Image: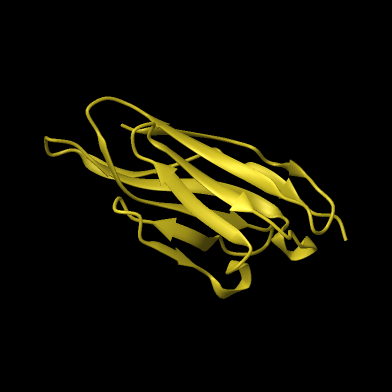
Length: 120
């Protein structure tokens, strides 16, 4: 099993920046695609950005040019740099990782979530 621990959420004014981190831990695992999702109460969770093990990234249109996803494979850590934050970015942000092992085990893990608040 792979555990994901997030950090870096908080409250910032419009136009501010935050960097989220997601650290993966476990034994004998390989992280494949990772992603950041967000959820607002009463709404479905949405994928904000994803990154493959080779560094190919994808973003939803509303964050393109403002958010940057990255990962450090040596540290099994993923980041989300969020700039020019807007009130519409307010949500709980979750990291997610697809993982595999040399054996038959594999799956998807989720972080505990971190709150990002941008007051209007």
